[in-house]
Length: 125
Image (cartoon, rainbow, N blue to C red):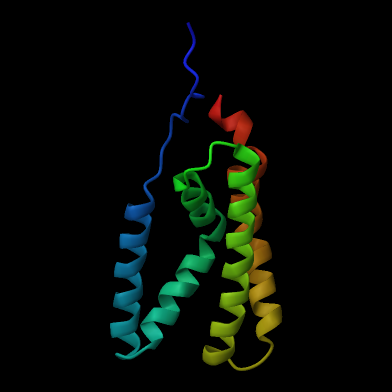
């Protein structure tokens, strides 16, 4: 008799470990650059750098059994991460923020998105 639950992927990542490591790096950057609210902005920008991975981990933690709904929740989270990165970058960076954030998203997010969202089914087998 087969189990009603699909098999879990062989390689698991911990959302809590990702958040703790990124928080430590952001606090270290904040202390290095000078104490203040900016270390939270550095933390958010680090979170932006691993956006698809974070969205995948968070969507997998949701109590939704239907996979396309979890993928949709991950995509909505990515949209919010992008908008937030634009707003925070406007406060930290002078100049063409939209080009910088858009280029960063293209270069950083494309491989991660392909791995965690597009090729997801073939990697879990």
